[in-house]
Image 1: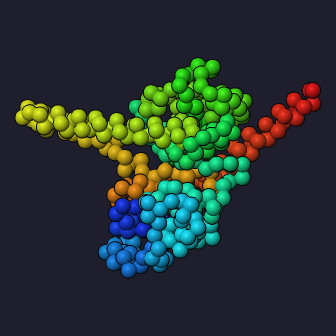
Image 2: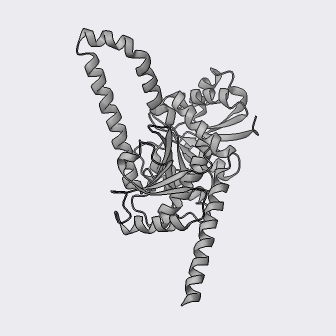
Image 3: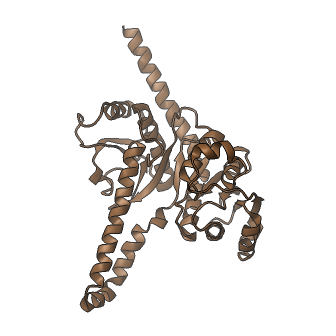
Amino acid sequence: MSAAFTLSLDAMGGDAAPAIVVKGAALAHVRYPNVRFQLHGDEARIAPLLAAEPGLRDCCTIVHTTEVVTNDDKPSQVIRSGRQTSLWKAIEAVKNGAAAGVVSAGNTGALMAMAVLIMRTLPGVHRPAICCLLPTKIGESAMLDLGANAQCDARNLVEFAVMGECFSRAMLGLARPSVGLLNIGSEDLKGTEVLREAAQILRGAHLDIEFKGFIEGDAILQGAVDVVVTDGFTGNVALKTMEGTAKLYSNFLKTAIKSSILAQIGMLFAKPVLSQVMARTDPRRYNGALLVGLNGIVVKSHGGTDAWGFSNAIGVAVDMVERDLNTRIGEDLARIKAEQAEQAAAQQAGQ
């Protein structure tokens, strides 16, 4: 059993909060009995829910506040006036050392803005990114950025690659992850100058990765690489397209099953196999996106998830704390910075 530590939970964030947060913590406690929780939010609403979870009561502390960040609140607004909200207090607990990480199913923009302001970024990281696991044909892959940075330069993409490969090591247990830059073609001359420059830096970096160069969109779910790197605009569009495609095919299947009695009878025989497919692609299984690059562990849960999904987001935070993700990121970024400085010095000496 690993060392005990505390996670900070935004108990009021999410469509069904605080119920799914408390229930999710209860489910997570079964898997991680040494982890304690701080529940930030309205004690009058949280306490009755906690009383119904006898196994959870001894490892939880309620930090009372009645103010909440809603999904409609703008990040700029909550930065100015949200310092007494459950989200701010939950993040602040990590900054103050009262918790090792924070999990929230609340407003994504507000979470990112508050986390950057309170925690700052790791040394060598200019922009944090949103990273999560995706199911693929042969297993799972990490992808980032998924929406934090609409425009990126080559330096940002290189940082994302480093953060993604460290995340992949921690979550998938890979000794030498493969990394690819998402592009409109796999040829070296395709794409923007930013992508080509990032590729050049990654090819010359002495990291424990297998850089595969450029990959196209259809290679993401094929599992062509362990880490898919892109800017936040492209990554978010790609992610939403994949989610929409999954829902479309699910709707097609349901419609086809209802189309005739024979189809419904056939469904009875096919149900065990279809159940396996549904479990493999259940979005709750992959719930929990990490805000990588921050000076602390911050995990974003989907706002509409249920208790099991929220417990999986807690699991991501536990894994990142236990495997010391931020130290790994800092070491790899320092190595790249040192190599670039040596190259610049060599070029200057040769002039």
